[in-house]
Image (cartoon, rainbow over the protein chains, first blue to last red):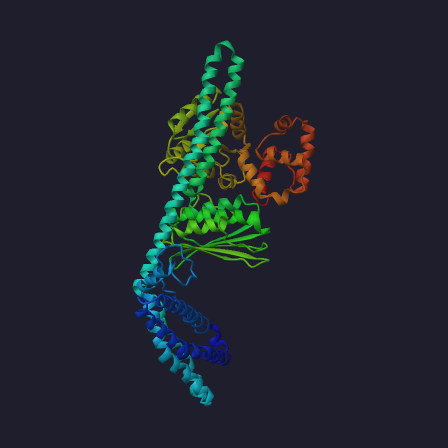
Length: 398
Length: 215
C-alpha cells in the first residue's frame, strides 16, 4: 500500500471507515447466511425450498466474499484470487454461479471445495472477524489512540491474510485452475493452427497451383506454335514469363505470412528493425534483449509487433511511435507506445484481440493502456529464456 | 567481363551461367557456400559478382554477409545480390559504405533478361540497381517527407532510386531527357539535397535520403 507510508494518519482513518461495513457484514450477515446454508441441506429432499435456500445463500455468500476480496485488496493490499471452479470453460471471470438448471447448480456447488471453504469462512467471519472489527472500533472510541495507531494495521492485515487462506484457492484449486487455463489455451492453439493450415492449403491451391497449370499450358501452346506462328509463340512466352513473376510474388507473400525470412536470418531484433524501416511513421526502437528467444516465441512476438504497428497506422492517427524490447525476470517484454488518439480496445475479431490469442499459447499477456484521447501503450509479455548472444550483422549500420 | 557467381541451387546456377555466357560474360567461378564465395571474390577480384543472399551452411544470409565482407576488403567491388525476397534492411546494409557498384534485385527480375543484363552492366560500371519493391517500401516509409513532390516528380524519383539513368527514365516515362533533368533538379531542390553532375552519386544521395539517413 503506497499510501500507508505516505499518509499514515489518513490511511488509518480510511481503515476505520471500512471497519464499520465490515463489522455489519461479520456477525449480523455472515451468521444468518451460514445458518440458511446449513438448514437448506436437509430440506433438499422435502420441497424445492431447500434448493432455493441453498442457491440464494450461495449466491449471497459469493457476493459477500467478493466484496471482502475487493476491500482487502484495495484497502490493505492483500490480494486474494477467486477460487471457484467451473464445469465449463466458457465461464466469464466475474461469474458467481455455475450454469445449468437449479439441481445442476447445487451439485456443481457441492463439488466445488471453495463452496465449503466459503462456509467455514462465514463462521470465522461471524466470530473472529466480528471481534477484530469490534476491537478496532472500541479502541478508537475509547480514545486509546497510541495503542489504536500501533495495533490497527497488523490486526487488520493479519485478519485479511487469515481470510485469504479460506477465501483464496488451495494448492489443488490453483493447479486445477492452471490445468483449465492450459486446456483452453491448447484448444485455442490447435484451432488456430488448423485454421492456418487450411488457409495455406487454400492459398496454394487457388494461387500457385492454378497459376503453374496455366503457365504450363501457355508454354505448351507456344511449343506447338513455334514453327507455324513464331510471333504468337513469342507472345505466349512473354505471357508465361509474366505469369511466373506473379506466382513468385504470391509464394513470397505466403512464405512471409508463415515465417518471414528476415526473422529466420536475423532473429527478432533484425526483423523488428526491418518492420520499422517499412513503417510509414517514425518509430524509435530501444532493443535491450541480449540474446535470442526460442524460435516459436520470436515468431509470435514478431507477428504481435507487426500487428500492433499495423493497428497504429490504421486507427491511432499517431505521429510517432516508441518501441521497447526487453528481457527481464524470465520474461520477454515488448512495449509499443504511440501518441495517437487512444481509445484502443481488444474487441473480438480485431487486431489486438488476435495478438492476445497468439501470445496466449505461450502463456503470454497483452496489456492495453489507451485512454480516450491517447496516448496508447500496448505491453506484451511472454515468459521465455534467451539463448546465447544474438547474431550480429557483418556491418553495423546506423 | 569476368563474373563470380554465388548460388547453391544447381538449377538456378546452371540457368544463370547459361544466361550470362550467352550475353558475353565470362563466369570464372561459381561458388556454392558463403565461405567459398568469399574466397573466390578475393582470388579473382571479378568485374562483377552475382550473389544469392541465402547460401549454405546455415541458409540464412551468408551470401549477403560475404558480399559485404568482400566489399569491405576490396572497396568498390561491384556486387549484384539476388534473393527470393527483398528486405530494405539488407539494402541499407549493402549501401552502408556509401560507394556505388551495388545491386539488389528479386530473383524474378532475371526472367526479364534484357533488363537484368542491363542492371548487371550498370552495377559493374559502378552504378546502382535497386529492386522496385525495395524502392516502393522505402518511399512508403518516407511518405510525409515527399508530400511536396508532384506526381511526375514522384515517378522520376522512384525510377532514379532504382538506379536508372536519365535516358532510361526518359524512355520509361515517354518524355525528353531534358524534361527528366528538369524534374530531377526540382526533386533535389524540394528535398534540400545538393545535386551532383555524377549520375551514380545522385542515385546514392536519393537512396540515402529515402533510407532516412543524412545525404
